[in-house]
Amino acid sequence: MPLNATFTINITRQEYKEYDLQTEGVTHRIIPAQPSVSKGITDPDLIPFVFDEATYLRNEFLGEPLVKVTNAGIMRAARIARIDISPVLYNPVTGKLRVYEVIEATIVFNNGDLSSTMMLKKEKASIIFRICISSWGITNR
Image (cartoon, rainbow, N blue to C red; front, side):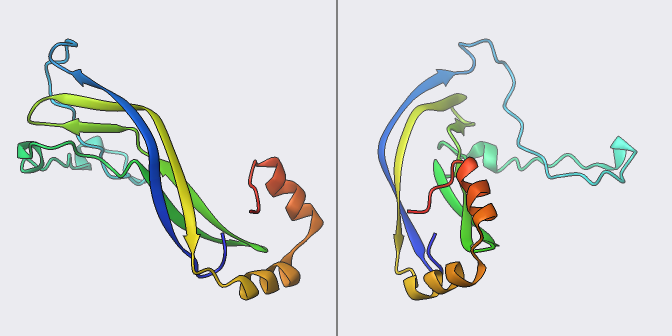
């Protein structure tokens, strides 16, 4: 990913199925994801259960964006990012779950500083690092 680049995510194809949870035999609402808990907490009663009732009154599909890119920093000569895919959305009012079975997206990097990127590669690149990232399936396009 070029230095200082922004990005645009274009969803080019998506297919999903909707499931009515009650029809599927699920009689309770889906509970929200809970915050991370420190390993130092040994008494489960000290861990608060987080539940926002107002969220469950929203008649819309809730969840994270289908595709999200998060900057993960610079590793030697490469700016790296994480691509998160969130294929499940939930409507708490209707009790429906939308599960995306196909998501195709194109990520376009805009306004990258190519000269600084090439300078970083020249200064920090190593053959061992290049072998490692190529074995991870990372491409340098």
